[in-house]
Length: 499
Image (cartoon, rainbow, N blue to C red; front, top):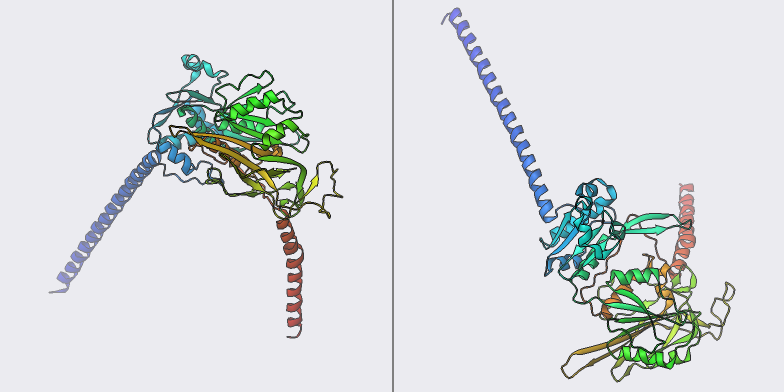
């Protein structure tokens, strides 16, 4: 092969190589484009799939600091086992709940209820201004407003305003702030209300200067689906048949014999009586004699405890909570608080069908002082001769019997300190007074489906520290830790000085 042919051959080979390179690059480019297209399609498909699944099976994660949208297992179980369809009609266009940051939280909770109920709980948004017939349909509820929610079952319906689903708090200046979400507690309560066979009723007894309304306790009773009313006993007429619970709250004058007979008859017909005494409740001989026949009496002494109290204030007791079936089974861990508590003596453990149970006691380091004592910062400490604990602070007497057909009949009398149900204690989520009270009422009403749900706070709640914990923290943080740090510094300084 001569030089000319060789040159031509090399030129042809080079041309073929260039063509082959271009072809390979084209193939690689095509593959890259196809890969991008396929990945894009896959991403879109996966996105749609997860969007569908999250709507159907609630796969979204609640990333809020206080789990605002999480639904408790008790509510989830109730929704899964609904035996009839429940409708939630929101009197508003859905876009209002989508675009409003606050109402969106309610919409999200409602969506989760729909998913967990597997179709038995349905939500419909209807602009009531465009459907005036809705006002006529639900006119029995009264005071309906745009944005309200109407929970409806086969037996009855219940109205909730958006404000019912939030937690509010007022400061010393009277300003009110939105501090949390309590949608689950009230929605679940509303569902239980509309499916219940019977709605219980509680009545405050009046006529003896009793307190016949308590904001926080009334709210808890309504949330537990109790209807509230007031009764007087002076006429001697029996308690209305639809009343299930009577409340004697801090009476200031004694009851007449005829009035006590009415209460006795009520208890003999499966009734329940809640009795709250305060430190200023006077001696009421006739009423107290009757209460002793039901197993307990309030003593004329106030209990103090420097060891198991709130932040070093001995009159703010943090009681021991005894385990009682039906009350503490599902109760969350935490402290109850009883300010200015009186001790309660148990007059018998069993008497025929009656049985007493001590629900709460003070610590064995507690002591008591006479109610006639004038207490101030100079004489609150324990003195020689002061009775020592433990003291009973809450007692429940039950009378369980059976008729000839083996039907169960039950009556209850609760002996409790008024401070336990004060607005300031029931309304403070640092303590579990409200949860305990609801659990107690569920037991008395034989309501196994009752649900207790904490409000979802936007910010953390206060830390409860007892008296002995204050002492431990003082020695640890103020004494031991600084001295230990100082000693360690001296040791290091001495060692380095001799290097």
